[in-house]
Length: 71
Image (tube, rainbow, N blue to C red; front, top):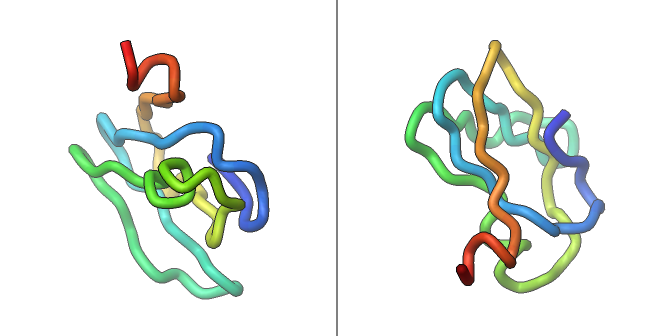
């Protein structure tokens, strides 16, 4: 689990390899793959997560927090 629906949006993520499923209300709404960015909307607006993100296959992600983004 990368993050859970309703949780804090303290980071957004970039997918270097693998796949991440985005799940809202128990349904897969998107699959993010290599070179995708996800979690940015709640992160940018500083709102709770509206979906969960779960690694579908072995994946390498980069977590981007506000400090890293503004540097």
